[in-house]
Image 1 (tube, rainbow, N blue to C red):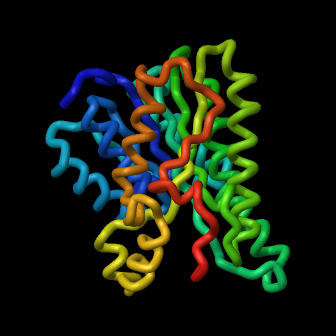
Image 2 (image 1 turned 60 degrees about the vertical axis):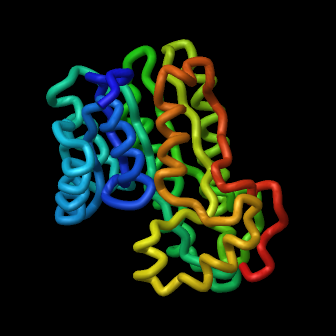
Length: 257
């Protein structure tokens, strides 16, 4: 393992699978002590086992809780700091879309999507802030649906757009404390196993054909950008959102979406 970030502590929210798990792995590979947070204890145990196999000797702990619940989020931060007086890195990777047309949205579905995609960023940042020391980094996961118009993703896109605006103001407020906050904007990102399990092989092929770089994203693609934003290499970067979508952000919306 590299020692660039050795000894630092990271809380990765939404870390039991996908992008969050990949972020945890790349941080652990760089010597970070990682706390995985997710709602399901069994999935977290599996995630921890996966990481321990990939990064032998890594310090990986788990905390089962809901990032959209303030008390749960407070407890997660306290747990993360139970063996360290502060946090150095916070990654928020919770999110998801309902694919409802505007006509089919309800007050309940809108509130649920706003909670899942915005409050799951606000609450971790808000509660971790007192425990973040100078030099700490926060990295949030957005989506290229903020810049691309997809049918059925109106509320999801709006919530993630709120995240991006939030980090710009947060960067301004946190700057004097030496705390950075940035975001990554993925396109469609799936593991090969997920594509097969969900029966999305044909979808993945069609979607890949619309992307300049010729494939859909993998969690590791996003995790590499998160690692850059969490590390000293980006020490002069804050309040920014970086697209990591194979160039899709430069294109028109795929016709089949």
